[in-house]
Image (cartoon, rainbow, N blue to C red):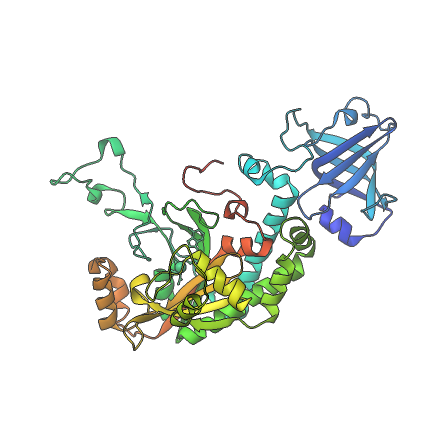
Length: 462
Ligand code: 4AD
Ligand code: MG
């Protein structure tokens, strides 16, 4: 008998057939003359109940000893279930124990705090919440690829090890093959990286953007989807040291085209996930955040608001609110400001453009006012910034000027500058933090709970 995923079996929905399933027991109930096994294989939110009768030859020796967490293979007949809350169940003809779970199995049937579950990275995917997170992540990743592929974007595999700091913020992890105890030294006493593996100081990338720009200036429309790393010491519910970023980059595109793409992208991906993950999304709406379905439906249906940074500052100053961080033109928008604009002033996603150049990265296009750059931040309810991007500075003189102003070493960006000498073109792009997207979709409060294995200050277990 071929085995089946529980999801397929429930969707197929034909009763009175022989089936085999494999999975882990979420709960077990033994009564005098029957055992109920609730089996999950992670393919969907629902599990399936198998009913095992004492006539089975290993009933006493094995089935009766099954406990939560055990791994089993069950073959039997799929029948319509008389029980509440399930349409089908399996009348077990055979129950094989694949692996017992010791008595101290930590995921007994009760609600566990997310903090506690984070210490169980090796087991937490077996819970309803994390199973659902993993399926939503999977659906969102597929939807992202579909969105770009349907529009002719080429998927670029950007490098993970790099010599350049894209954001110029100095928040990079070093990659070295030197023995720290016996690193070779230069005459001035510093570590001599010329003797290191790459012959230079290498680091983990903070963004694939600069390489995506190379590709866009050859292939026109590209996107990356890869891991990125930041050693910023932010112990918040929205920051990870390792996270996944999606970065489209388009030649012959300006800030308006960039906004249009960002809006279509968030709408398209949200629509797909809502369609494909109804059970999981229903679960999040019921158990985690009862506004999540409404918020996501609004994303799909309503146009995003667009405003400039200066307009945003005016709104904040006119709000009559006293913010923890006072607002004046030139300051960075803090999460409290972003949330006020999105949640209270507008009530839906907002795209903010044209930020002061002093608070944005060197590569952004300098506007005619020479005070602002063509930056784009997309802000959504509860999360704040979910996307950051810009039109890029494609003019040589302005770019060199900005690199100088930002105090960055020009020679390290030599190839980036050369692209401005060899057939430059206006181009633009953005980066979506994939985990922020999943946080937004699931309503989960902490970003550590939407990535399989979070890496944050002081923690990289599993
Ligand atoms: O705004 P950021 O820093 O932009 C860039 O890196 C650009 N190079 C992207 C581009 O234009 N191609 O980061 C982009 C997004 C943020 O909006 C946020 O969603 C996410 O990445 N992000 C993080 N997510 C989790 N943990 C962190 N530490 C993050 N830092 C940024
Ligand atoms: Mg940003």
